[in-house]
Amino acid sequence: MLWIFLFASWLIFNGRVTVEILIFGAGLSTVINIFCCRVLGYSGRLDKIIFRNFGRIIKYMFILIWEIIKANVGVMKFVLKPGAKIKPRLVYFKTDLRSDISKVALANSITITPGTITVLVEGDTYIVHAFDESMSEGLGESCFVEQLKKMEEKTNV
Picture (tube, rainbow, N blue to C red):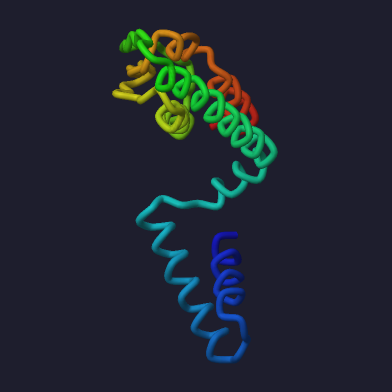
């Protein structure tokens, strides 16, 4: 599947089709595909997981964007409010996510949401720095965790 995607991308970005472009594109796509399989650990299994969860991934992206917007508004309230008392804190929580990719997705989702930064992920324990107490509530049971669990259930990763 990766090879097809690479080859199709090559043809689209070239804008024209000649014998030389087809041969070079096929060779380049093959080399990149072999590199991805041997060095980066790519397998066709990943494609199946992505296709099986495509709808959930799109839903996760919309949820993430919505949470980023809400967090931006929350941070702006603190910044624009004169004399606001900010109470930063470190939050420790555990999650029962099984796969490493889900754990990394959760850590990255927390980090790109304004007002929170994932400081450390060790096993199933997360340490998150929150800009204010209000931004640290419910991190362990967040909508991110819920969606990632649903994806893990569907794929048995």
